[in-house]
Image (cartoon, rainbow, N blue to C red; front, side, top):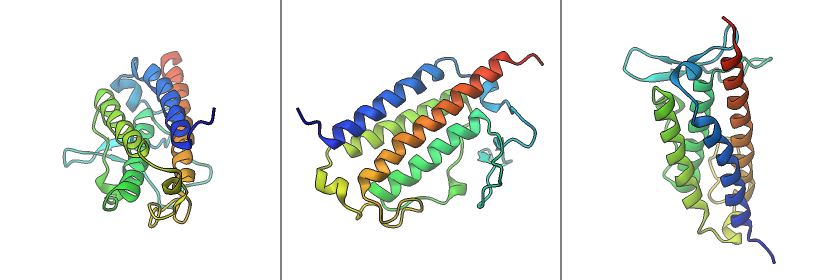
Length: 176
């Protein structure tokens, strides 16, 4: 039996998401905002009632350690951007994509983005997955077929979730 590529992509997404759900159940604000190293990238209140993420256009080498809050913002940032480019009118500026201000709100935000992404993928045909029409203008995937961008979303999500899990374990094991 042949599995449609869109079904394979959504199964991968669901499997990856189940790992996030495992970590999310014990995630709290203290763990989200804990900085595991000096000069860590995190999310901070910006004085306007929103939470801004640390960011540099050219990523430093070596890349800085990141907080769970930053990681959840990062997932939300690239998912919002990818959804808007591939299935909407175009993405907002990076500065407009803010962290929602707590572990529960971040989980709800990312869950809504996951559901939106999954729903956008489900009706796609193989021809639509092979097309580059939806990826036109995407900052990190322009001219790639949508199937490659969707595969990247699953991979990037898995990577970020693994980092969240590891940082959460380090936070729980700290002795300070």
